[in-house]
Length: 416
Image 1 (cartoon, helix red, strand yellow):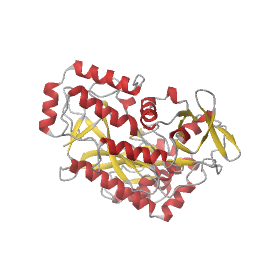
Image 2: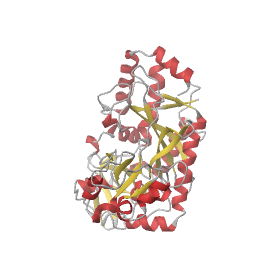
Image 3: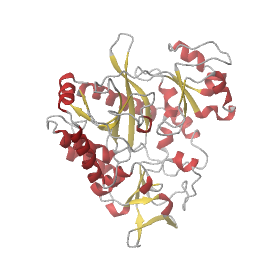
Image 4: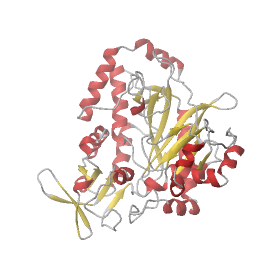
């Protein structure tokens, strides 16, 4: 969005550079990158990124300081998925932002959602470095936040993931990691931090200890788990783990799994009122409580209640789904009432944001979703570290929703 950098990139772009970028990524990820990589990075001012990064810190600390919110969020954890030994704060946090026009016409960020769960901390910086190499982008453009050098970034990530433990006793745990689209991130993380990647379904339990098998078949005690297994996927797929997820194991979590629920879309109605947060209510409050009135007071245009009413300014979102699964645009009154009353507390209605198409490309103006990645090591501070970018021209921003287009997909930000 910095005009001279944007124009310079578009003028100098050629397809061979892009194909070289894809080859570099496959080489550095030690696998084929299956999700779409955009032809272009984006160019952002540090001022804009700092505004987003500061908002994420403000909102997360607001939640952590609210005992009523934390109690309600704990009650929303699905039965059988509350793990023991909850940490005082999450090690990982992400905040997704849209860029919209406010009432004055100014470009301003709005929160899409906030989530205390790891993202592509390894792959994202490698992808940004690969953009720089493939397109010969200036070294004066930085990639990281909070004044971190690239080496300081890797040091902080290592500290957050490993804690005080040797790499061989820390595992990155996921469901069937070899067949996840995020395998490039697992491979980069394993290589850079020296930790093994294990299928969470192969972890062995004995007494209060957990173990994994190395390639030679030797059983190694696990002292810390970098958890990448999404609880929603475990629940939906009805996966039976070989150990009790909720038991008090003699192991540390790098990213305690309860934080996936505690700071999530569940927080959005509690954050409504902050200038960066679009109005949002729980579905049960909208249908049989004060939710509808709250949205109207917040300025959301709603039709009169009727069976054929279409809520074109609202999104219906399931609470704990990931990657945009289950989101419904412009739900009808019938759609809302079709959800059983005992499940309505598991859905949100959020004001729909109209992403501004701010990225000029040869395929036309394109919109960006900007994710700020944070690290919070044990005994440290919550630190914004890296922007992650998704480009799109459809209603949804995820890479799965833009696969048949060009100049969209996963991207990186270069910061002036």
